[in-house]
Length: 196
Image (tube, rainbow, N blue to C red):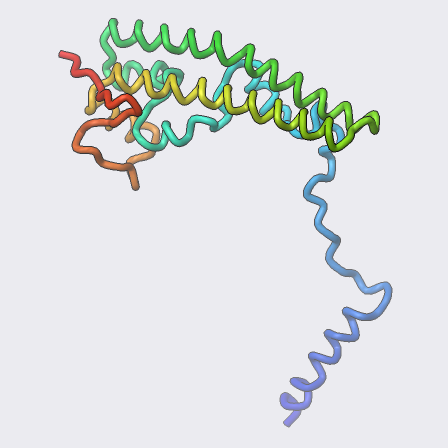
């Protein structure tokens, strides 16, 4: 009988606590608290460092996770993959070219993001300026993403199917990886070279 009575009282007590001033309530979400201190508000320190260093920032994930290794990680795993000297040299050349292209594009993206940020700081932003600035940022991001993706495409043609499978295992991608009969397709129809 007493338990029955308390069942009726508990919801009332909960309502009273929730509606009484001074009763502690969960703080509202503040997901962006602290981000106002960023150099460029739209980018983290890590993203800025990646852009300056020519790193991919996850832009090449459609390639990386579908059987098209990137030159940077292939070089890191060169010994485990059993790269020949020729393969290692060719992949190193691709990596050097990728970095030479990506770093200047990354610098342009940083400058464009900083310019957009500054327009908001100075309260000089207008709809027309906003449209132009975001269009420029979008175009630079597209160029940077294309740069990283195309080098994944080129790297895959330098590896054997076995090396690509081994790369996927070493990187932890084997679960759910697509199967193409031992070959990795490309936009040009090329398949990885067979190295003897």
